[in-house]
Image 1 (cartoon, rainbow, N blue to C red):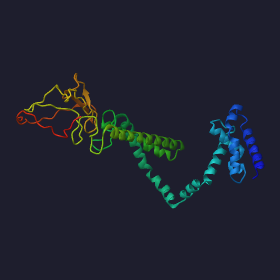
Image 2: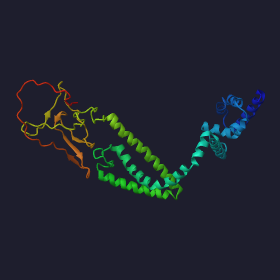
Image 3: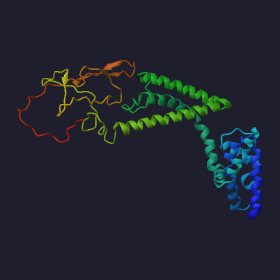
Image 4: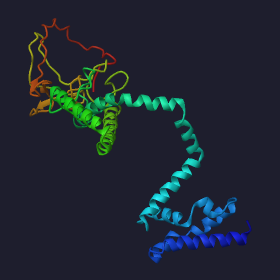
Length: 327
C-alpha cells in the first residue's frame, strides 16, 4: 500500500471515529484522539489489509475508546457489539484456538462430567470454611494443640461446632437451590468467592503466626519469649522451696538486674491465656486462666505439685552450663 493511499485511509478512518464520538466535549475528544493518528499510521504500515479489517469498524473502535476512557456508550447496543468483536478476536488468536482445542478434548469432557459430582462435597466444605475462616481471623488458630481445625467461637469449641453445622446447612441449601435458580446460583458463586478469599486470608494469618511469631522447624526457638531448649514456650514460672512448698510473690531478675517479664502469652496448646494483672509484673507465679473449651468460662491454671528436693550441694562457685534456656 502506497504512503498516499495509507494516509487517505487513515484520515477516513480517523474522521469516522471522530464522528462517532461527536457527543463528547471537544477537550475530551482531543485528549482521547491525541495519539490515534500516529497509531493508525503504524498499523497501516505494518501489514496488508485495510484498517477496518484489522481494527474493526470505526464505530466499534470508537466504543472501545469510550470504554478505555470510562465514558458512557453512545449506543447501548454498541457495547454488546464491542464485546462480541473482542470475543471474536480472542477466538481467532493462538490462545483462543488453544483453549478451544482443549475444551473439545476427551479429558475436558470427562472433567465436565465429573466435576458436578463434587458439588455436594464442596457445599459441605464451603460451609465449614465459612465458619472456620472468620473465627480464625478473629481469634487465631486455637485447634493447634489437638491438631483439629475446629472453629473457636465465643470462647468455646462447642459453639464453633454449632456455627459450623449451621453454616454447612445454609451452604448445602444455597447450593441445591442454585442448581435450578439462576439468581441463587449467582449468589452461590459470590458466597464461594468470599469464602475462598477469607480462607486465604486466614491461612496467611496462620503462616504469619509461624513465620513472624517465631515458630520454626524445632519449635519456639526463635520466639522473643522464655522457652526451654526443646522449644517449649514458658507461660509461667512456679517457684518452690526445697521442701516442695509453693512460693508466691517471688520477684525475678536477670543478671543485669532487669525484671523478667517476657513470658509467652499463650499456652503450649495455642489457647489464649487470661491474666489477673499483678501489681508487680515480675512477681511469680502469675494468676493465669484459660477459657474452658466447653463453657468458655475462665479456668485457673495451677502450678504442679513437686516432691521435696534433695539437700543443696555445698556452697561455692560452680561453672555455668552452656545452652541454658533463657529469654
